[in-house]
Length: 410
Image (cartoon, rainbow, N blue to C red; front, side, top):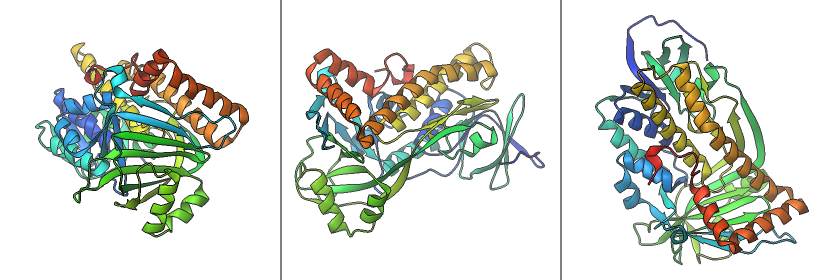
């Protein structure tokens, strides 16, 4: 993406958010609510094809502070318990373990909601903010200056801002324009997503089967309009298996899903669109550059294990808002180097530790190494048997107690 010189009128704003997915919308709303003149560029990204988002407790708290609690609770399903089932066929098969939110004094671990419904709720909230302008046009070029950044939109307009917040996805044009490299590991796995209707109640349990090709995860959804029980599915498998299953008719695919799920939810049928996407593990080597901060998938992409990816991105947004607010109180520039350095420091530990744990767990599933199986099995057995360790793992799995911004604290 090349730089440019503005030839026409320039529209000013304090902060420009590039990308209107969940993290971008949340960042823009939060910044506007904090009193910053904010511009959000991009059409709202309503991912269909069976895509849902599992919002863990801190993320739910953050989004509730932005005004969408009622939408989440009305259109989502609570996650009151988590079940992990070892289906690797390993000699050292771990016992099935169950975690209950009530064990750590919570009503639920979080909420699962269809991606498109959450984006709609956030977009409606964004439209109500008087100091938030939404421009449904993507940015095609950037120019980074000492005091501000310029961004040219596809519709021809030019925007000037003190800070650009890149929430523009794993291929992030803003990150590319700032010459921030990424560490990329393309995984030999593909995820299939869909929404299922089933004959038995999910009892508000999220069930994660650990298989030799990756996790097979069923997450509760509210009942459908016909009253049928529903769950969302993320099934990680080999590329070859994904091609075969993507070509199956709904009835055949539902039968394979029911078999893999060991019929825990009874008879199943496909009740929504399908999505198929290859997996990648990716981390930006820096989260900032002059006049730029990366959030969400622009900063990091993780395999879909334990609902960590989006929740990590929402923590990016919440920490960035808190950092910029502190900068303003000190009378400094929102995009100044010291502001960006504080944001980078606040996120490195969380991003790094989550990436290591999730990638290590994924590797342990697909590698088939005996020592990896033994370590994973022993770890899960310890979580099942040792009360303090269980409770610590549940709390830290939801969010890091040592790195939680104010907006995410209950």
